[in-house]
Image (tube, rainbow, N blue to C red; front, side, top):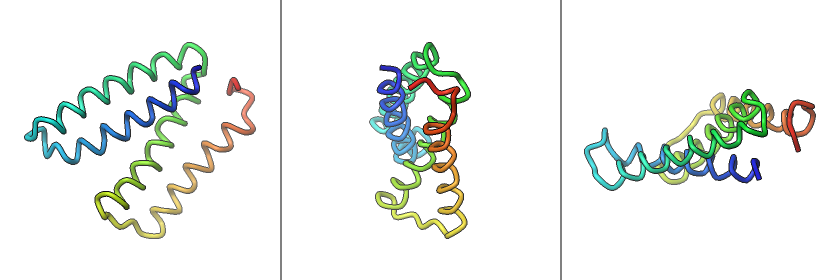
Length: 109
């Protein structure tokens, strides 16, 4: 159950971050409402995962997955172009999360 909560927290964080760009410094109402609601949901769900999964692992997966996903949203939705070193760095983050998932004995599966 904690992994599902973490997944939903990651998705909520990515939605909130996307809406943050659309909120334009909190000058637009509905994107601003989405930001507050989705970040609140993300942090609440993140806190629930900490009852089962170690904080370092949760944060690494949450932040690493968030970076990778928001980069894809930026690329395909906002038409932002990342250079090769940026994609390599993001790939390294994803590789780190994968290593945690597959090989760490700290992770409860």
